[in-house]
Length: 192
Image (cartoon, rainbow, N blue to C red):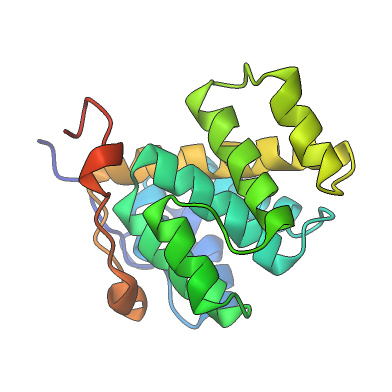
């Protein structure tokens, strides 16, 4: 397997250096995902831009993490499951909610469960979700805009999940307490 560089600000291409500054300012460190994506400044910028756009949706911070963790669970991304479990905790998600997301089980709150179920269906079905799945989301109290906001979250996590699969990105020290292994019953054929 090829080894991918986890850039420092000094080793990164010139166009990626402002992204190091931005993540340092926002998080207090530069996550390893950004250090890997810096090889392609456009890809790193796309990730940060999609993240900023997700913050502009109607989804509150916990709902955003429900979407991001649901996608990452379906894609079996250990890096993103660890990172977003930590972020979910930081934004006030309950331990019970985080554990259910990490296990791929029903969530304790019906509305959030509908959001997670819809998100996971979008990933599994590659967007070909049934009318019933959409209706369950709407019946839970979400507006139609949420359908497209979930797609934004799926796009964001597809970029990062696939990057982490290919580059085998090391989990940051800040998220080591949230290290995750995909439950064996839910592994994809490629990871089984």
